[in-house]
Image (cartoon, rainbow, N blue to C red):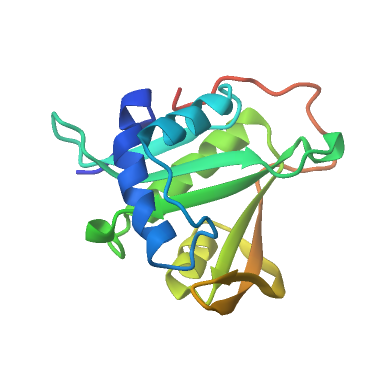
Length: 182
């Protein structure tokens, strides 16, 4: 049984282990060096409780982390404060089993409760599994930057998917800094 909960500092090593193959062998991440547990812990802390980090676990007593998702600031300018960029990474052993979708649904729900209006997913292409997961939870393709990244000896296109979280016509005066999974 899959359980969803807020990520904790002690999850940083498992999160780093899930992320490392995406960095080292693929083109999903444009990082070139896989961050260690300390770097992941620092990234989680930098969210300052505003941008959620959540994990899917196997639900047993040890609660082994199977996948993680998080949101970050979309852009630095104040006009973008109601939009977030989202990311999700699933361990190879549970890919294509629905774990990512459950986790992403929980992240989207949390972001809605916090009052964010738009979520942006950035996907290196081609990546049908990621596209399918994003679209299953409400993201829609918005555009592609052609040959924008260079990794592993080739140029990579990057697609942008957008999900409306809340109506963006009347922004809330302030967002709650607490998340459902906190």
